[in-house]
Image 1 (spheres, chains in turn brown, red):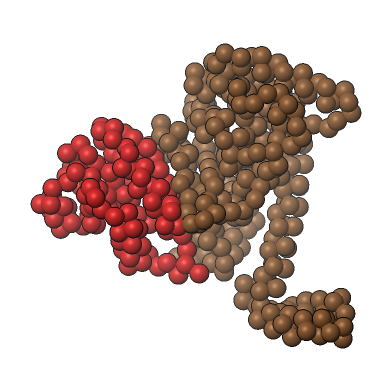
Image 2 (cartoon, chains in turn green, purple):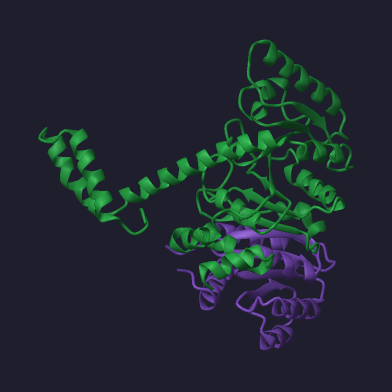
Length: 319
Length: 136
């Protein structure tokens, strides 16, 4: 299948072709670039929703009930669920579908699992491109569920139009939640497991903690803290409404930030590819003894290597 | 560089013995594969829908209920309906040799029984997938 046939297939709503296209993009290289070029300019209109939070907070269960709620309103949904790869074997066990089996046969729902392949930040390196492809598939919502994150994996807020941080009661005291990072980066804090004792109190403590941050002159994007229960469904309709009510101005702002980030990552990746060319490697080994002997300044060596690499236009570098 | 092999591990039908499926899923992960685990009580339709969305190279079914002939045939039929002709269908459980032979003649891959060394599974899947979908 040619790149433009593939792109046409994705946009026509063919799910088998969509699945294949996602694999091509995930694998990267020339085939991925050709296909993404054919898809350009981005045809989709999906709202992009990020769901993040620590392991065990109930992200997948929350996504499951959000999808259920969206389907009741006739919205089609794609879910991209990311789980970590093993640093030792490079393999991964992707288990987010276990919580979403009720949607397995719904033609309006498409669920894809992705391994992080050791990228930092809670997403995989190709997640931005995967989201573009899902968007082109014509879904109303694209939900990206990150790897279970700690206190500094914030990449999702740069990708999504709006991000929900999922927390649950009894996962550590308030000091954990008050630390910088995870809680203040999102747009909504979702206190899940609202059916458990202590959940409402935990929600109140989070609200109080945000009050203190703001009074102290701190910055936070969070404008709501909502109590839900993925187990009972309580609070989920209101949460979906809040997610959907994100203003076009905010979405536009986020998209601009997202494009900047994506371009920055692509440039970094192209520069890294440039470094991989044979000429650069040859010069590196050639120059090292000269630098060591004090005959060649590092600055000059770097300039010569970069210029040589650019001239050689390596495969996998700039095209 | 070779790509990652993606495998769906599922337990179709009614039996609840998922220990074996979990051990196999972990072993395939440790062999460097990306394993999508869907859990218990899957219908053949659910298994094939997930395999299509995940674009897996192989489907591994764990069946301990005695319903293996029905389940493997149904999944294989649905795979053909959906055009998943280059996807390997394999699996394991308590399955008599004559049933394994019958399913194999119909296009199901090798089926493994108790006591199979875990590395044999990964080797078999790697070899079979390489024959069906290019790894490089």
